[in-house]
Image (cartoon, rainbow, N blue to C red; front, side, top):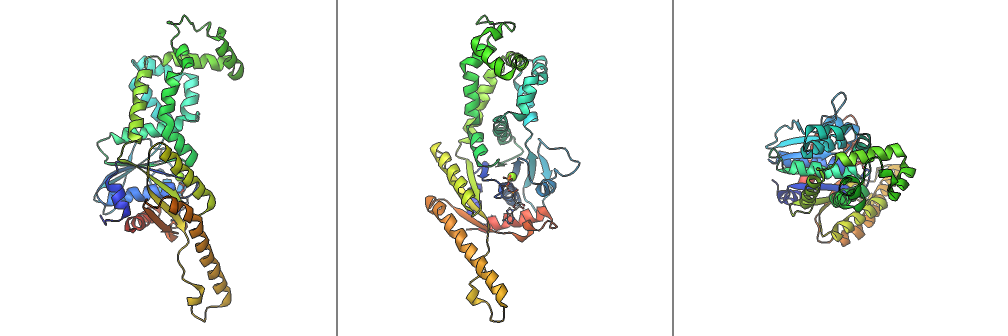
Length: 361
Ligand SMILES: Nc1ncnc2c1ncn2[C@@H]1O[C@H](COP(=O)(O)OP(=O)(O)OP(=O)(O)O)[C@@H](O)[C@H]1O
Ligand SMILES: [Mg+2]
């Protein structure tokens, strides 16, 4: 341990959630923080969602290897701990939940082969966010790991991820859902379900066949809802535990900074503080154009002037967020050449980024 800012955040974390706008480097920073913690002796699982191809290759999800919903060990030379990586597969995570809470294998099979289920389990908006939270919960309770780093989809969906367990609970407790799954107690039969006015309206919108599939699904789902509700409650608890920390990544452009601010505000409204901000992909410090030797040709000098001006512009873009979070640790990360160069070994580049993060104080 080097005793830097990252160390102190990681030392008190069992789960680190990494959030930020699209393309700012969330996945790369997640992998780099995980690698750094593994080098320092932690047993780390990093969960990533759709990594860029190069990173997918580096983390072992490359060509020919199936997408891994289960952790895969990543060899990391000189690590005192362990680095594991997995890529979220929404459908398999949902299937595993259905298996766990189904009273019988038969019922699990009925649900899994239901058309409505097959549609929602992979694609319904919100399902991915919930399953990401579910996966986090599962890894949090897995003895093989003492730290879980979660890479989230871009900001707005990441917030859905935080509220997913509560929404699932609201859905299960919704009166309409209760009518649909409790046909016997309310005298509602599959054949006459569509005679209910509200269901007739839904049938008109989604089609009668789709509604039939949905009703069959909800009936097959009976007996699982209590388990799901309890599970959603447990997942929610982990998301709000004090050992679950939130790291916000931003670049120094206006839109990512606005997104980061929005995310931080939303977190705060849920009583959750941001533990660390990583300002990523910043322009390096080239010094002042006046300091450059006199024999530097003019065109280069002009170019340098532009780079210096860009760095100053970045500073003023970041300034409001910085004063908004005066008490929160920040790490500034300049452009890492190895990450920009496609030909470079990506795992080595991630280690390089990890050491930059680890050295910040
Ligand atoms: N400090 C850095 N210096 C140079 N390049 C970087 C740095 N951080 C990240 N990158 C590069 O920026 C690109 C985007 O990074 P990454 O895929 O991690 O972003 P993301 O926020 O996860 O994107 P998405 O929102 O699409 O998931 C990648 O090519 C990565 O190699
Ligand atoms: Mg990403």
